[in-house]
Length: 487
Ligand code: HEM
Image (cartoon, rainbow, N blue to C red):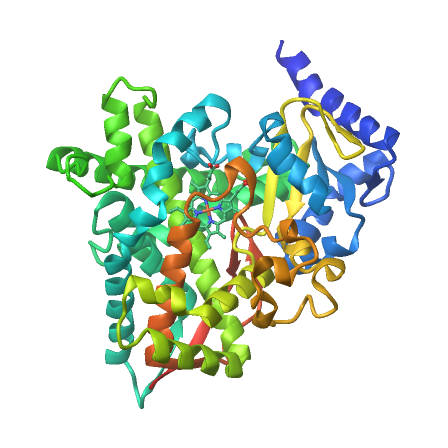
């Protein structure tokens, strides 16, 4: 039985998918003989998916093409109308791709589940991230932003200091998601915040290696590279134990907010209540853990990426930095209130432009579970779909000749005014699986950026090395050292 399964998964399915693509005249990359393709594949993947320039270069290839990575056949699709069909119209035919499903820490949580299991959890957790609920967290967000910027001020030498802003943002976001989702202080013991973000980072990097690196092509590569496997196992244990402890503490404190009038429950209470009640949203103990880990990861990696790249872009565009600061000082500094965030029009435009140029999740993937028609193409069961958001966001046919430039004013009249086809702008995805945390993310980003602009001016440090690095999110590989000056 094992031999038949091996032959089916490793030989029959990929060959039949390739045959189907060829029959439909879908372009193939790289063009080569099948055996050579298998051997050269890890190189292609490394060139195009692991590296940022490679990912952007996908924008110069055909809008639809296919490629083979070991046993996986993937179709890259960057035509907005086809993307809409996959993510919205035919959404039920697709689940999350093999890379996401291989992330054991996400288990069957909201990000990775499909079908009824996903539907149940989305219904359960939707309310927690509505605007009204996020409004209640504004004070926590503001307090964290003020605390961190004050701390930088205490450590200034000659009014100036070098800060790795990427690590700072990762730490702030871990602390914030700890407060917002679990009502827990993850900054204790000292160094815990960085430990958490570094553990997630190493875990994602190693898993990416296995999914898209040489391991995708060479069978049993994992056995040969036990070091990688050991690190993955260590990170899984460390992160699960940490979250198990948080859950245990919450259960012991019995501090559910469900009974409080006018207060939406926080994530952990909602999950624990659903576990204990026999309700339409009943979930298992494992799913409580999976979701806590999912939100801990999704709640810090993405928003810190958005903030880091925004700070980078404002370092290179000092005029925009000054204009944004003037806006903050006019509408926000004197009264740091939730309502005043909506007055920060330039900040909004800057964040939208940053999400366009450096989307924190630069690729969206899907796995086809049921044969379906996408445009004129038949997509067979087993095909993996790759939607290169980063390439879509820089497509000159859609965004104009200045697609690669930082020009926040393109968003002056919203997304519709910025792009010929607004469905080509997908920083938070679209359709039923659209990002559940986008209101929270944008509130955090606006507040933290506003507080930072109000207190500091900054430029890139000469030590900065530009190397955007793709794993699940887009992060500066060697951190982002900037020089901050107190105003
Ligand atoms: C700038 C920040 C963020 C960006 C750019 C972003 C991006 C995305 C994208 C593109 C998706 C769709 C993925 C897909 O279709 O496969 C997604 C889904 C998701 N995001 Fe975010 N995200 C951000 C912040 C957050 C935050 C702060 C949280 C949680 C607190 C969060 C939690 C999730 C979850 C749980 C899903 C899965 C939703 C589902 O499948 O129902 N995200 N995000």
